[in-house]
Image (cartoon, rainbow, N blue to C red; front, top):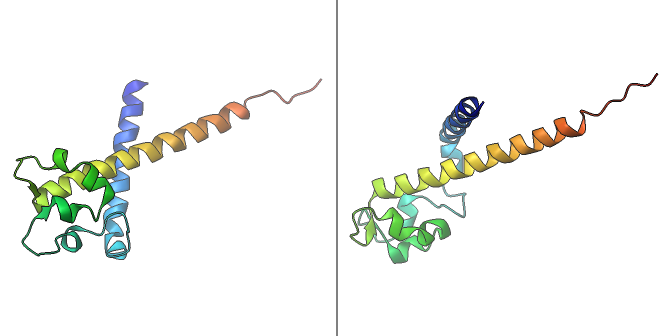
Amino acid sequence: MRLAQSLFFLVAAALALAVGAAYADDKIGKDDNDPGFHALDKNKDGYISRAEAKGNPTLSKNFKEADKNGDGKLSRTEYLTAMTKQDAKTAKSKVENAMDRNKDKRDAGSGSTSSK
């Protein structure tokens, strides 16, 4: 059962990422929480500084963790790694919430309604 559940989460996360990629062009410049690498890189030096990262609250909060080489700035690779990790957490949370709601519905509907 645990393996099946793990596989379900893996497939759901992959599907969420695939769907997200399919609609990525529609979101450019429209997501207030993640304006994108180029929009955050205000001085266009190819890196996101700690000050520039403040344009994305999640990235700013996790800047130190995202800065893998500790140089005080995020490369595009470091940025994408951090954002992909955040997207996976969000997808997992949404799947778990959906599964919980579905389980609650099944549990509520499992009562007997037959009469003799």
